[in-house]
Length: 449
Image 1: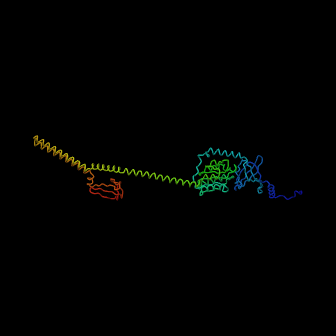
Image 2 (image 1 turned 180 degrees about the vertical axis):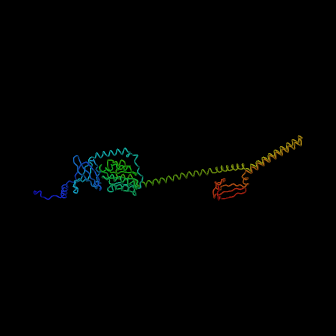
Image 3 (image 1 turned 45 degrees about the vertical axis):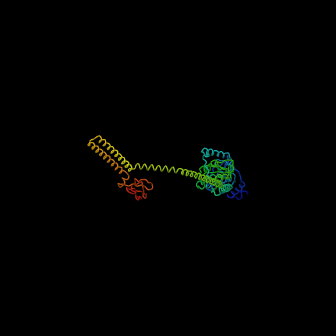
């Protein structure tokens, strides 16, 4: 038979589960330190894992929304301090610790991992100044990789547009803190390069603690900066610690305002510089024009002075050339030869007369006189025939003789050159044709090589 206390109504499973939840409700805002084990990511972005120490284990759970807010995502074997609450999941009958915040328990270990990353990157030459790219003097647009809210993006845009009012600005919004920040920043950097909308990238956030800036000490962000074709400027706020992102960036700025000043010049300064250079160019051009004018004037005056002497020299050369041509003319040569032959005939006649006179005075025989006269007549006839033969040959070889046989001489009207071959002229070229008697002016209608 049941006792009175045993006769009470039993709990349903749901009632017992709710009772357990009510009992656990005070266990909120707890801090639990332990090692992570069995980290798994669910289909909806939630994370489940175990938190353990040397003797006990409790199931942990991190919602996707909270995971995006934490500084770094826990990994197996790491020890963290978790802040959250205890909850009893009635549908599974499982007690879990719902994690809301994650903090490093041993920052020293985290810094040791960071130093190891720095050593590897330095060995690759990632920090070498020779690897750094120069910033463009005047980009068409600037890409801003930063949080879309807060003072950082406002300061960047205000600085850029104050210096260059119509500068293009392309914003790539990213998470700058939390477990999702490294992947968010690296994807944005790749997208900047793929889009090709800007010529320089500024990666910025508003500073923070070592843990808050940890995303910029990760290898994935460092590799994204190193792999960028566009130069990258970092502006990670007022902090004494240089991040890996700062060390691999092409230019490191301490504040967003400084970054904005580094990537774009002042438009007013450029306009003033252009005006000054324009004025300097005008002055130099005017001075050069004046110098050239003076030089031309001096050359002109010198030419005026030298012109009479040049004309005289050219006139003398022409006269000398004309004399040479006259001297070498076949007609002149024939005339000189005829005159020489006539002079020789006169001498021969004089000599013959003298000889005859001497013969008569010496009472030479008539027969000797006859022989002498015949010899002289024969010699004179031979000389006359030789002279005629040479004259005929010279006349035949002279230009006039060639022309008299039906030939002609064609001269290009523009150049004055004698046309010896059909390839030396062209259709529609003007020519002058010299004949034995007279000249013709003509135009080439057809060329037959």
